[in-house]
Length: 181
Ligand SMILES: Cc1cc2nc3c(=O)[nH]c(=O)nc-3n(C[C@H](O)[C@H](O)[C@H](O)COP(=O)(O)O)c2cc1C
Image (cartoon, rainbow, N blue to C red; front, top):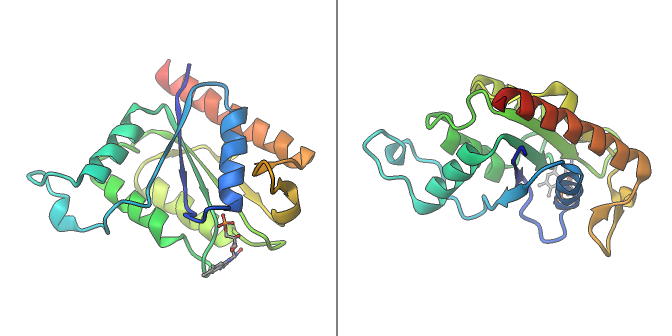
């Protein structure tokens, strides 16, 4: 079974991207986990050298990514960019190399009809620079997310979106299976 680790770019308690993340994980065929990136310190290259002992939350993140067969990033867009908390997490993973060749999907959800495309493209570019294996067929931009979520369960309830998420997660699982085979 392929193991999926998910990171959210939103720290908001009732995050719409958090709802998308939970729904995507429930559609993934295999064990899943989430990593809390909110407690990571700000990236500092002085703490990132070969002789440095990484802060505990950084070591935990690196270990979680290393043991996952695939990674899912689900994120909002802030000011046409990637939320700082998520970029910070990725910066901690650049030189340590856990993302190298790792199958990775990027999903951005926005309340707006065309929102999220900048952050989605920026995340994919950063991951390609990190030589992650960005699975294009597993990436999605979800517009107008508000009514597609049930506020009670905090899950996606819009059927076309759920079907599309199921397809995306199947592509990610297939890529992870072929990588680990
Ligand atoms: C500081 C800030 C900047 C934002 N900039 C954008 C943006 O550039 N594009 C966009 O689609 N949404 C933008 N939004 C709206 C977010 O997409 C919206 O707040 C969304 O609900 C945040 O995701 P979440 O529900 O997962 O927390 C911005 C929100 C904030 C707070």
